[in-house]
Length: 429
Image (cartoon, rainbow, N blue to C red; front, side):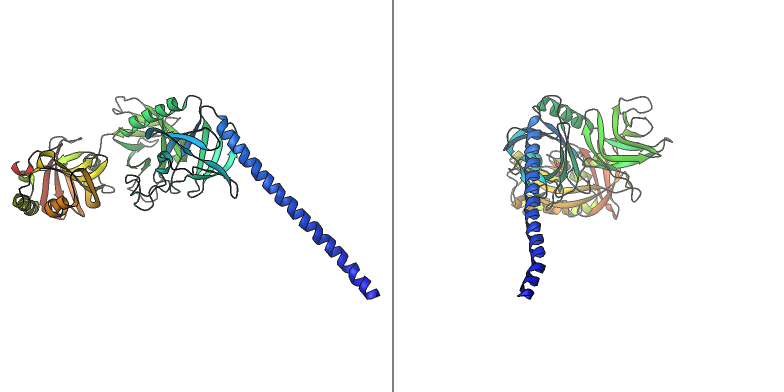
């Protein structure tokens, strides 16, 4: 009997401790649940609290290689949000939510082209980024902080910090100001970085990024375009000068195309004319049989024979910019057939006058241009271009010429003298 009581004496404290621990766990679980519910409710209240809406400083990829963009959001209710951006003047409404996760998560769970453009595969978003991954952007964000002054988010996929600020003016007014800034900046040809000693380095521009590709490991300037300048994702340092934004300055005698400068004025992005390879990339160039070298004529003759056999007419053959694409494009049958294929035009790193051309693989059908026209008739045109590097020689002007000579660096007989615009009836010219 005594042994029984002794065992009970030992067990009783253990049972009491166990009982207390379970009760404490439930309390902690309840507290965490309450805190989560409060955080979600607070996020909803803050998001809808701005009557004009929010400006989202959006960077889609963890590597920042696509730069940044400005998305404008107005949270109408607990279920709907209205979005527009600095690159799209549509205003689209879709569903959103703030949901429980490891913390409160803002999710744009209804498809909205304004923000899902950045997360779709390239094959679905118009060719932005890789076919499978696109621009690697987020549409779900962990809410790190939510106050009336700012909302700080973290992209679930990219890990990027995304800051939202309340708008001071009407959403559409603010968005228009950013669009005008983007339109102005995107028409500036090219840039050189000028340091404190006045030395300049050419910067490669891709999406909303700038980088010196002549040296390995140089900083990637990933930016958003803001009215009258640029704002960078992070602070940069050049020659001991730190900066996180730059403002545009009008042309002067020393800077005839204008420049952007940091607050101190010591570091500048100098606007320059297009290098030849970039100038070639952004324009459309017409080709004609009479301006084709010996190598190319063989392939032109093949195309001519196939067209003649079926009574078809080629009215124009161009390479370069085509309705938002880099392409090899054609007009046939007096305009009844128009289209082409995507064709990658890549300026050679470290060079200002060389490009590499390569078949892009997508059919572009503007009007009646099917795979039959490409495969059965004009396919041979691309053979002496595909995978080859060409040196560009200006004909009529050293800067931004209207006519250039393309010379294959591996085959001096593979040449094309092309003109900006369209050459009608290229077999007769």
